[in-house]
Image 1: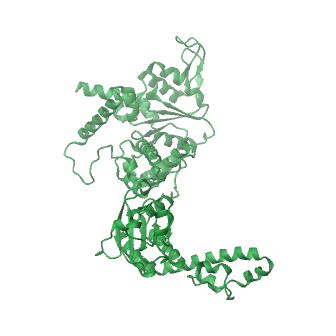
Image 2: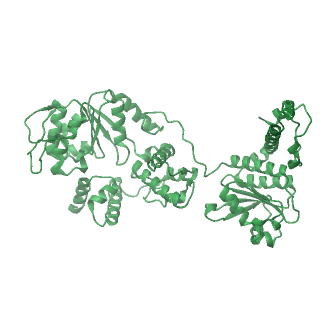
Image 3: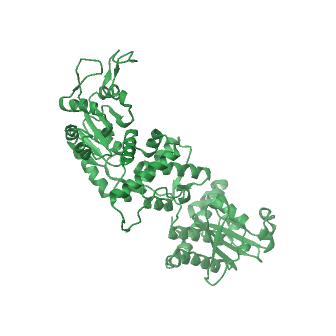
Length: 538
């Protein structure tokens, strides 16, 4: 209800009995229907008239603040907007002291600020500002006022109050950017109820004009494929491919750098297929020891090898008409590549130690971060298997090629991580933090972004911050090529040097353990061994 609509419905001139508490506010008359309640239920009349008074005074204050909105909008920049806020507050109240305070860091960790006066030529005196009052506002996020700070029990130990003999003083938050501080050293009771309501309403409007840098961002609706976040053109191309290839029965090959979300793309293919009610079985080929790879995939019979004391079905058998996802398929040993080729060509396979032929009715989706075409040319991967797998080829873009998706993706990952904590942690993501995330290189792609957010959540919780701030993200941990820079070396050489620095750092952090270093880097142990062997030969 607006202030004008309230006034239009007030034909009766009687004031409510509670108006004495707000004598400095021009009170509207009570509605006729409310006056009639007095004779029927005096107690109800008291409560309703009090609610009416609060609503009417708040509406009047908002209307007053909106009348001064042009002064805030015309200021042009944040500093000028805050100076305009200070000038209007001083004109309204007649207070001799008024400053806008901008927080430095998190005010809940200790009050530190930069003060701005209404006039650029005026230099504020920080010693005249009560840190006790500021601390109350920073902790509660609510305005704080005192009619006579000299005799207010809250400020008995406040040095600034006593030193400057402050009487009337008030502090109103301006979003999470800072606060408006206003004081009169000589006159108690300077700030009437109308003053307080109007200044509070004006400060809230100023916060909206400025924009709140720590306000949690709201997620935009994401169009595309369920389960995958992205609205950028590269992701639009991927979604088109997923919708086209999903219903098909043929094998599919998902390409992309490590950490881009190839398994999510494979799951989307499964969900978009007629097999979506059947199992989706994922196998990381690079994580299976070579001596166990065949048994893990195809299963074995009792007595097939030492330790095989019972028959066991393999991952392929568990598919049961669904989708078999082979991640890091380029790491499969050659002997298993032959068996996989037979599975794709004939739809049959055998358990280890068995002569019985089993049928495979599912679909195979493979993924790799390697160039299988090049590997096939080097005989590191069977070319006939590559051609079988590549009936439907999809490429998942790197994070640096879809920077527009980072804000939505970061919020999605944040929400998922908080859900993993069981809802016990409530942390938002500030706009400034999102801007930092969007400028980083992310060579580890979505996986690296997710790990950075997990670290930031822990830091935000430890500092009791309601939002993730840039400081919680830590320094940039990967080298970047500045935008517009001209490379001074060949791209392949720079890539190899960059890989070597990352691997050496991971080995040092894991005390030379190659398995743990590979896990940290998001690559397979075999790939890491092969790359290091190539360096040794050089």
